[in-house]
Length: 198
Image 1 (cartoon, rainbow, N blue to C red):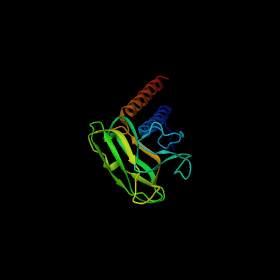
Image 2 (image 1 turned 30 degrees about the vertical axis):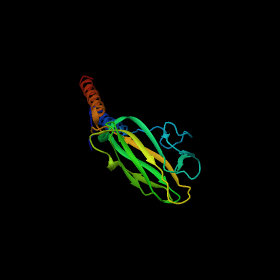
Image 3 (image 1 turned 90 degrees about the vertical axis):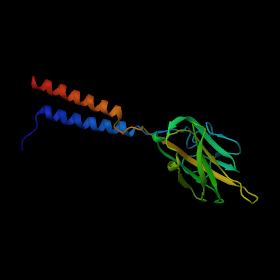
Image 4 (image 1 turned 90 degrees about the horizontal axis):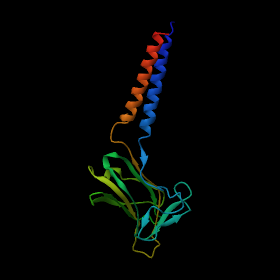
């Protein structure tokens, strides 16, 4: 069986490097929008609330901290507007000992909003509300409410691992990937030219 010339081996190796680089760049496109999404700082900030939301340290979904509320109060976080076509997912984990009701709202840069009610259970349940994004807008806020029931209470809602993942609206290859590929091809061409005169 014959062997490849050294120049072809170098080109093949550079091609592999280029592909790996492009994959790494593509994978890095996704990013967390929220700050302190799992409350692991041990404080609510930069989340804000109009009521009794506070840090909880028992029976959290993950890590050491989560947030809990007693009543129909909101917890929310605002951020610079992100085009909704660049949002990959909006998810959060919630539980309610009384398995009652909750709600959320997505706020947009034009002042409009979208959202609906949620039906939590007494166990941790993940809610994925990505499909309720309004297209063609800029997302600037996520708000989540607890509840008040008809009995004496308490009306507890516990929240953890809130996440808004953004991504580039262009394909994963993107301009960074094209640049990496172009540089690898240019380097391969230079090595081929050098090997011809070696």
